[in-house]
Image 1: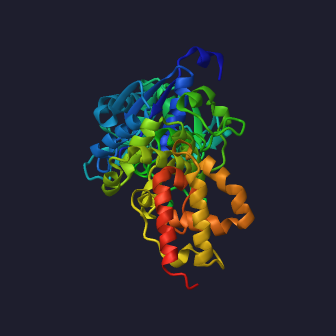
Image 2: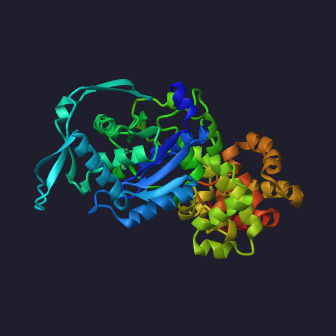
Image 3: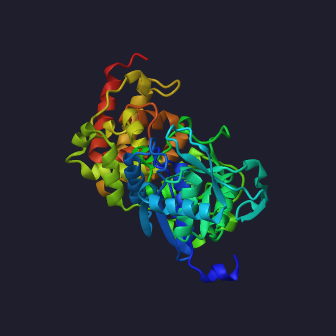
Length: 456
Ligand code: GLU
């Protein structure tokens, strides 16, 4: 960056084409622009590049604005729409023709009888410094005198981008690497129009684990889809920031404010960024853990079924314990709750489970032995006062003794007997959530069940 740039305000842009739903590739570019601008007290201009009239749709613009809003990313100017700025492009075409740096070419193929406008290619080597890839030099001769408008009133993409970038005072163009081939053409146009060449940073491609460009088949691609899966905006922002950028050490958890503070173009790397759901999950989980109990609870309620909500009503203290002891421990995104619920991970807290008697037996155990053990457990647990009935205390009470008799012989029937599930949290946690009365009642029922038939 030279002295002049330091004096000037940084102005970046976020210019999606509303021809589809804003996807995480767009959002990552947006975020890098956002961090860069906010860090340097600069400005962000939002504009919709809707030059492709047929494919551009208002609903995609709305979708993009909603995404930004939900992610809490604001901009300072716009949103502009290129379709509403045609006069600027027409002016530019006129200027270029007058200057003799553009000329009318052959008749347009659209059957209008209009002549296309071509730029006179200076046929030279164009050099620019990319903040990510370093010095880049491209010989423009291969592009020929490329078309910049279908007619004097119908500009094409590169021209609209350049006119807008100049008009909006863009100082830094931070965009996906797939646009790197546009850069020399755009520089030719900026020079022809007498504009100032911005700084460039082309961000590495985001790829799936198969190293192919990220797309639908890799999973979710829009914020909306991530939201439905129960990811937090903070988690997704944090994760996307790490796709191609790193803080220079191994820190991974960042709030948006921290990202603004830490971000620098120098720390963007130029190898493809692999989208890794495991990493996303672990980062999202860290952000979930920062949520207050109240917010966490309300998010949980967004993801549980109406049926479960009914069961919970009147048992809210118990459900709060379930959130704290089970849900908070086991999920990475709120959508995981649906899976836990399907596995029956919550029902047994509210309704005594049906117990298949034979499954109570651990390895070579017998009903007689199991009955005795359950009785002993019951006696021991009864000694713990109701307000001390915590997983920790329960464990302390049973741990040494179960060690002596072989843990599985006691802990398996206790755990399975309380939950009715082959896989469930540890029995101490379950018992704490159930509370003393309910735990002892279930133990008593198990003892009765084992005593009903003791022929083994
Ligand atoms: N409209 C382009 C896109 O959505 C933006 C390219 C640019 O940043 O210059 O990919």
